[in-house]
Length: 164
Image 1 (cartoon, rainbow, N blue to C red):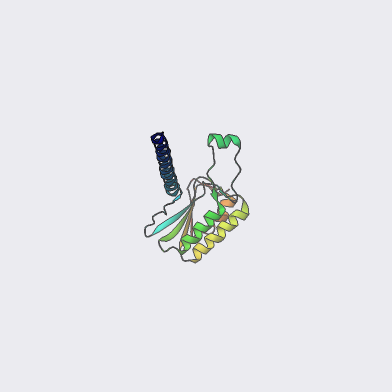
Image 2: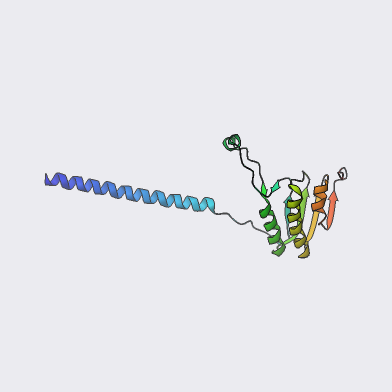
């Protein structure tokens, strides 16, 4: 009977030790996975790089709320937060590796309203004051698009393009 209890206690302690080891390995794996997923690698910039402001991606002050259908189907519109755009332009003004900024308006002007445009334009003016060139290129310019492109040193338009 004494041997039976010793075997039972040994089995219980062995099982408990195995569970503790497996749970700690699983927790360590989850922590490492979280670190790998959440770590963002900074882009590698070479000398004489130009920052491209692509106006095809909507620039909005707030992110839109998703409907249930959009969430389930994964139909999320790509949106650049206004603060991210302004911060990127301000950092580019201070970075010696970035020598110019290209406003790419080939597809469309997706900045919502004059308030957002004004903030982006103010950041572009600060970028220009740092001594760096701004070039704007578009197929067609609307009033909003030209408002933003007016800060550029050079404005280029497609020969078949038009001012709206």
